Image (tube, rainbow, N blue to C red; front, side, top):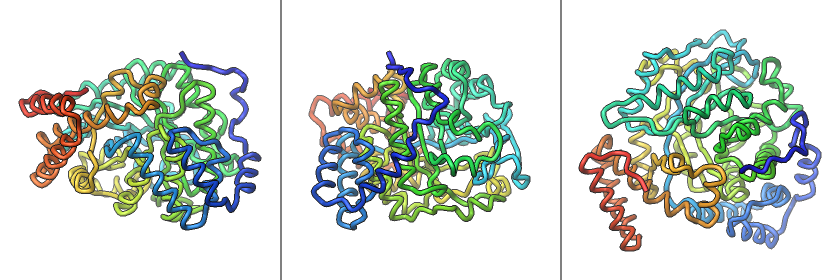
Length: 471
């Protein structure tokens, strides 16, 4: 059961602006000993307080920053092992009634092509995605009345029903407008994975300035969007901020306070945190010249600090970033990435460069799924399409029951190996297959004999044609 506190009215922000500014001011120039103590707490798998996070944000000395980087790598290995979960975004429609000045979807942008996939087009997109080996999707919708809870639920049902020989989608996450409790209940019924809402910026004055009209102009309604999802029984939620709209340190603090709020009200925080940087968008001047650009160095800092601050929360790094930044950032605690992505509506099956060029923003990493998987393997990571926890009910509080004692690694590594094997057999290029089989053998050699034999038996089932084998 969730712990639902009624002390806070859903008309009041739980992001304490004055307190955040005070903490960022009073924690400047922390000494080495203090940073070491905070890192030690994080490595013991305890969530940091906002004040402790502020100290890390203000640890500007290069030696302290390197300590934070090293600790983030160590913590990620402790909790998640060396696996990286892969997914792809699928844009269902870009109709929108909001006026977000940084977004290519905003209603006043007459230069982009408006489109919503029909049933046949959805099937064509799914055919391409499953033919490449994708098993996990996040479906993305503009904010428009036509994308009702029933519409979203219908799309999810069609995705789960789609089959392409051995190809299928096993988990569908959603990025859509905040819903009412009743709306979330409709979506939950069809087996949603994570419901994701980005606050975009937690800084209220900036939020008001950038969201000039439409439902999204309500800061508080959006802020409580995931509370309503939790009340409706969706216990897998994702938060995020769009970095570049306001000071990056303030936004990190906003994410930490949002996590703290969900933990205090429901007993469990977000399943994932996203931290995309604003990228150029067609017909959107502000996106081409963000008011608070975040350097690559500070971007890596904020990733490492979020990892240390919320040890058990998945961190998502998207293909907005260029390959080199992705390589460097993955080491700092990222647990999920998209690959082989395309963000035009219908752009997986219809390679219309005009649609791609006039999409929501510009991608930085356009490599194929196989290329990304091969590189991950060569760098010692296990690419994973695992959906076992979701389908075994290990979400929300149940997930934390497994995660906090350190059991996630025990589930994640075997299931990552099994889903990688399935990919190699069905979709992998010759070079990727060779590298992947070597990685699997190496991972098996590290395991206790009984577990190794169990996994070998499951791998033999996959080779024999059985699919969706999991622990």
